[in-house]
Length: 237
Length: 115
View 1 (cartoon, rainbow over the protein chains, first blue to last red):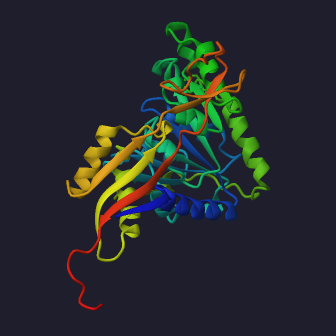
View 2: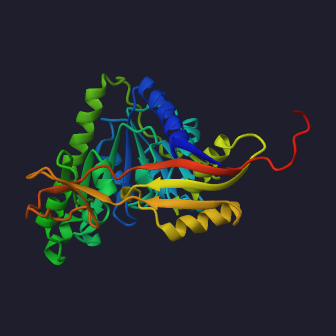
């Protein structure tokens, strides 16, 4: 017997994501889901971002990796609010993992939350986490064809970053070709160039600040990061 | 391997739609090309989860591309394929479909105790 069913496969994930979105909005926290390939510079970008915005925005990070707490340890140098999620075999974060992580973060102490997804240009894109915006990070060393070859991250992102622009003189990377592919896939998306290693990320930190300001007033108290008191929480499956 | 977590979700939906007493035999899943689902990996994940008793029919949908100049929508192998009119002002439409569209079940074979 054939039973017709029309059901969105990720409905359950999307429902939990909606709960996360409500929790984060109620707390007045602007949330970014940062996606990019392994080695594109996601953690390095966040280290610089936390440094450069210290005293201006209170930023928490949820970081997903298959294994190790290395990223959380790096980021705990700069913020007290880091939660590591180890996904085990999972190639992406899902809304339920983020829901658990949110329980370990003091949202009242934050203006901005960045969820650093598992390094992967494909799997994370389809899983809503409850973010305000998805940000896709590409880098010059990955090659100029990566936008065209990974259309979903381009169409789903509200902002794209091209990192390692300091390598442009040394790499056969055609910026125009890359940007043309991006524009054809997503004419509306903002595209910013950054060089994390040279600390040329002002366009990105400025963009973050504007997005957060549009969300509403921030709490005036900006407590200092206490290096010894870092709350390095972790979640394992 | 997002195929594995998708397989889990597909099975949850199929199980929830299987009438009481019936046995699930086949599930039809439609996936758009944006989803980047590898058919072989999907079947592998499905079998790892359920064994060979339940068949997964995976229908991978083609790219649909719209031309901004002549407004034609056509099926393509490449999301940035050039239009037959010569224009390269094309972009994919949709493609993010991921849905269970049907299941097939064997109705209960054991006679029911109560009428």
